[in-house]
Image 1 (cartoon, rainbow, N blue to C red):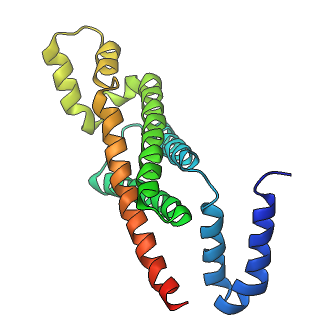
Image 2 (image 1 turned 90 degrees about the horizontal axis):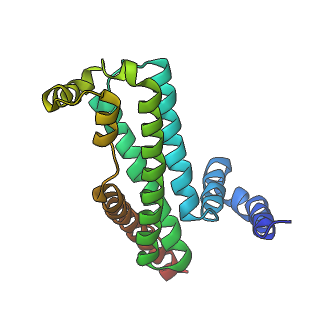
Length: 197
């Protein structure tokens, strides 16, 4: 039996006996999902997010290799990532009642998600470079390649996409800010209910 099994058993019992009769099926199901999500560690959320983004990138390239990344698609992905990191921060802050835990959770999840997503992107480039070079959103990169005088496109692209310090610091900062926002929101929402109780 896993360490979380008694906790999950208690959640199921509370869901059936208390929450479901008081809140109805939809609100009770949302409550249950939130409780289960709070059991998942921040690094796990980061891994789930990074693997999902990476898989989406690989699959969409395999199916539609010449489809450019439209502004709407990029905005949607950014919204999903920031929302996920904020929810991770909210869950961590709610558990220990400290915003700092939300900041750390968001930063950890953000870094792991970005590392896994960037790794998947490098795999995508290695697999589909022969087609990707003709994408509309690669025009600038191809112009830089021709202007550089380099003779090997694969080496040039690998260098362009090589990890940088910002590739580590950026996700930590963005994840920390999103986690702080999620943590502050979660704690602010939980305090009035405690004051009434």
